[in-house]
Every structure is written in C-alpha cells, then in structure tokens.
Length: 170
Image (cartoon, rainbow, N blue to C red; front, top):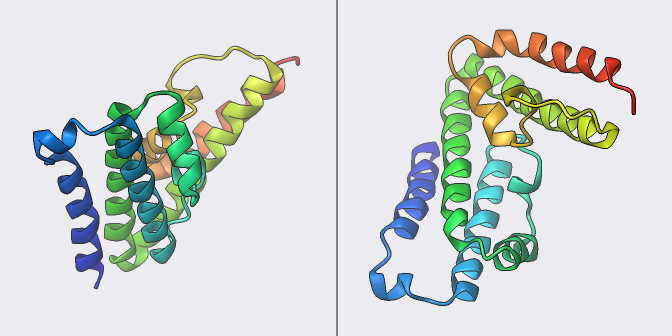
C-alpha cells in the first residue's frame, strides 16, 4: 500500500514535469489551479501517513495555494514546491515503514516546525539574525535534520536559537 502511495506521489511529480509543450503554454491561472490541486493532494497524503508537517507549504486549502501562485506569478516556482513536498513525503513514508525509524521522521518534523516558529519570533523581535539556522523554510530544516546524524544534533540547534533569541531585545 505504501509503495503504491509513493508511486502515486512520484507519478504526480513526473506528470507535472513531463507535460507536453502545448500544455506548458497554458495560462498562469490554469497552471496555478493544477498546482493548488497537487499541493492539496500532497497535504492529504501527508495526513494519511501521519507525517505531521506544518506550515504554509502544507496548507489543506486549494484557494491558499492558488492565491499564492497567482498573486506572485509563481507557476515556475510551484514546481520546486511540489518537488520539496514530494521529497518530504518520500522520506516520511520510507522512515515510517521502517518501524523505529518512524521516530526519526517525527523528530525531524518537530524540529523543523520549531525552527520556523523560532524564525518567526526572531522576525517579530526584529533581531536580524542571518544564516541557515534562521531559514523560514520548514522543508529546509526538515531536510537538514533527516540527513546523517542530524536528528541527534537538532536539539542543540533548537537550544542555540533559543539562546540567541533570549539575548535579542525587541
């Protein structure tokens, strides 16, 4: 079952990228509708697999994704968003099918969500911190965490951000 879900997810990505040139010439609105529908489908897959992803990348609202795409004239960026979600889904699915490794995916989801929350605190306090530690991308933090030994290092990164935030005056 998990393999067929993974295949469907990858199939969506391949179908998006391999569209005939006539379809690629479609209107921005049409591209954004297709993007929004794909994004919501990926959200549903994440929910079904209990991946726990949060943030705007994982909205369950078609109108949210459509508006993001159309307002910023983002149909070309949309493909990278679909790819990022597909990679995160693939990692979630592969780790949750490996029993104990499922906890690694959950740790990384929690780490990524906390990192983005800390980023938002930094913005609200106008601290001005820079660098990869202060990325506003859930997928960036998740991908960093899921690689190598990083699930074990992630708590120290969270603590370092918390310490930096504590020294920043709002």
